[in-house]
Amino acid sequence: MAKITQDTKDIAEQAVTFIVATASKDGKPNGVPIGLTRIISDDEIMLVDNFMHKTRQNITENPVVAITFWAKEARYGYQCKGPARVETAGKHFDEAIQWLRSTGRNLQPKAVVIVKVDEIYYVGAGKDSSIRLDQMDTE
Ligand SMILES: Cc1cc2nc3c(=O)[nH]c(=O)nc-3n(C[C@H](O)[C@H](O)[C@H](O)COP(=O)(O)O)c2cc1C
Image (cartoon, rainbow, N blue to C red):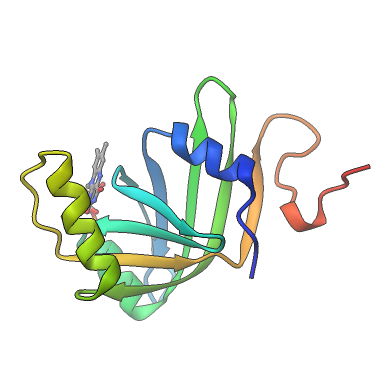
């Protein structure tokens, strides 16, 4: 498990969309922008599925997902990787419905995708590019 740091949460707040990458069981890649995202715990990210097709199929075949987001002003971001699970009922699904309702959006989610974050990498220019956060030199 990787602990999602406060800076990762702050950058996620500023990010407009997350890029969600999956792959089919035979390795065909698929990347999509997802706007309805929320960090729901210190090691989980929730994505709201309104329109996913290949993404959902890929998660069924091959659950490991990579999610990348960045803040335009900060000019850096993070890449989070880990297994995803799909929930079509329950606490997280109900929260997503309430959340969409509170924003006045006329969308009925099909499911939520919960990604358990195992690895976090820094993405940005400079010496820290691609460094895994739990292996970053903090001296
Ligand atoms: C800016 C933007 C935000 C999007 N946000 C979402 C979202 O929150 N949830 C969703 O299911 N699809 C969202 N989509 C649609 C997906 O990017 C994509 O069209 C959908 O997952 C179908 O592609 P797939 O078959 O590869 O999964 C968004 C698209 C754009 C351009």
